Image 1: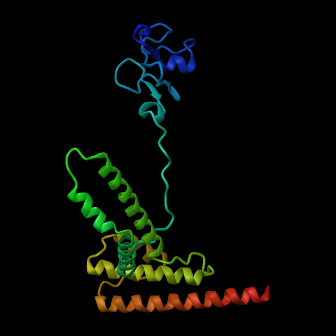
Image 2: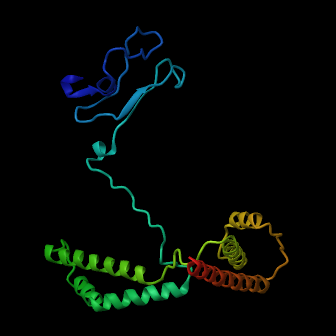
Image 3: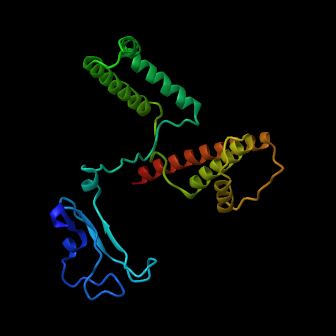
Length: 240
């Protein structure tokens, strides 16, 4: 295999001395190997026990880093903690659309896009391609700006208390019941979990109007708990 520039991947990783036999009838040296290009190297690898695979041979396995297979380092994904744009809230969606439209209008993005479309031919000229890439970047920047400004987050603004947590869960429960009755949500398991956690008795005879009334009462209780939590916070600061 060396004549065609292939190397023993496991032998290169662990050395060729002392490797186990790979066939039940072979001697003490392996008769199977995994060969690869010389520029590849496995991070880990080894031999399975006899009987793990069908047949009388051991299974051989290796792991090759992705950067060697695909010739680049894959960046780690970036996870956002909280998304400001909530499609289920029409007020947030409307504010996002207004902010995005205003930002794109200031950049004259609509007229510039029409101009690019009128000049689009095949093959696309380099000048038009660069203009399109620049416009696409500006549109993405406007979308990021609109999402940052469409909803104000008040994380940490309310002091934690068991009563406020229970009030939030009650709002979540009745809101999910209401959405389920309207056909907007099918996640029954979450409703059951909240019901068990708060020790509520399920009443299938409730009408949509009664459930909507329960949502309003739960939201009022949450607002009251929020006000009390803020007053407790101010009181504690004053005592300190």
